[in-house]
Length: 458
Image 1: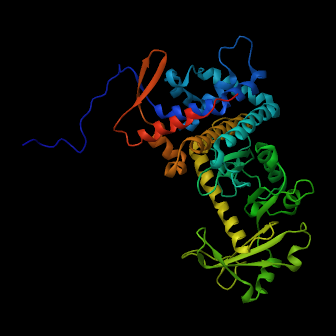
Image 2 (image 1 turned 180 degrees about the horizontal axis):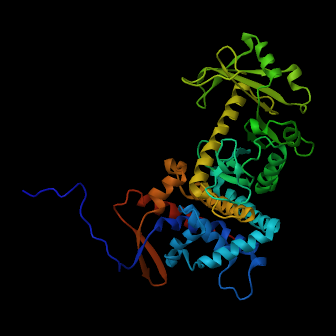
Image 3 (image 1 turned 90 degrees about the horizontal axis):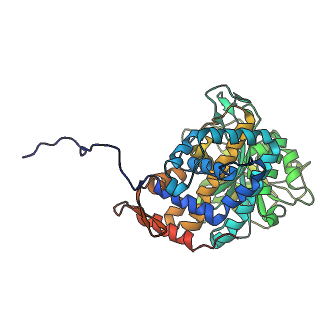
C-alpha cells in the first residue's frame, strides 16, 4: 500500500522548453485589433510623433501597452510579457522606448489626446457596423452612462488630493456606452480630475459629455436617439440646460437631489397617483412605487422636463435619511422622454447601475491606480486604459456568444487569455495548438473562426 504524499502531485520545474506560448488566448485581442483596423488607425494618428529612422511605430507601441493592460498588466513595464512572445505579438519596444513615447505624447497635450480619441472613434463606428445586431445601437438608440471613479494614490502625484471618502488620490469622471442586458459596455470618456473635484461640478459633466458624444458615430452626437444617464451628480441646472439646448436635443435621465421643495411635493401626492415599480422581466417590484411630480418643482428647469420620484421600503439594515418619509426611501430623477409610462422610465433609470459593473471592470483593467507622476502622463494612461477596455468589449461583441458574451475582464483572462498553446510552424503558417483538455479551448477556437470570417479593414 502506497502512502499519500499530499493533496497535489509533485512536479519539478526547469527551463529550456521550446515551442510553448503563454497567454496564447491573447491572440483573440490581436485578431480583434487587426480586424477592427485599430492598428492602422493608431499608426496614422500618431504618425506626427514618429521620429525619423525610428524602429518602432508609435501606434504599435501604444497598442502593445493597451494589450498588456487588457491581459492584466497595471504598469508600463508589464509590456514585457508581450515582448516574450514575439510569435504572437510581434516585435515589442523596450521599456525605455515605451516611457519616452508616453513622455512625448504627454508633452503633446491636447493635440495628442485628440489624435488618440479620433482614432478610437473612427474604429468604434466600424466595429459597430461589423457587429450588426450585437452592436449597442442595434435598437436605434445609444445609452451613455456617466459616473465618477475614485482612484487611490499611494504616493505623491500631481493633482492627487484628499477625496470625499477621506482617501487620497484622483477623481476621474468617466462615461460608458451601455450594451444592455446582453453585453457589457465600452468607455467613451475619461476626464482626469483632482481627488477633491466635486461630484456635481457642471463644467466637468459638460466636458465629459462632449468627450463621450465625440466618440459616437456622427448620427448619434445630437438628437433624441442618444440618452445620457447620470446619478444625482449631474442634476444641476447648467448641465440639464446644456443637454436640452436647442440644436442638441439629447435625451436624458438625470438623478436629482431630494430638496425640501421636492420633499414637500412628495407629501402632497395622493395615494391613487402612485404606480407600482416594475422589474426587467415585467413583474411588479415588491415594495416600490413611482409617481410624477409637477408644479413649483419644475420652475426654472428646461421645458418638457419630467420629474419622477420613487419610494421604496429600505433594505434590512439600511438607514433612512432626513429627506425620506413614512419609513420609505425616496429617490428622484429628471427626464425629457415623453409618451412612456413612468414605471418604464424609472426602470430605465435604475439600470444605470450597470455603470458600476463597468467601473469594476475598469479597476481590474489598469484603473486600480494611476502609475505615473505627472497629470499629463496619467491622462495618456487613461487613454491606454480606455483602449484596453474597448478591446475587451469589442472582442466579445464580435466573437463570443451565449454566456461568454457577458464575461467580465477577470473571467476572460482566467478562462481564455491565460490558456497556453504549442506553436507549430508549417509552411508559411503559424498555428497555435491549445491543450485539448482545457475546458474553454473550443470557446477560443470558435471565437477565432468568427473573427477570421470578418472582412479585413479597407
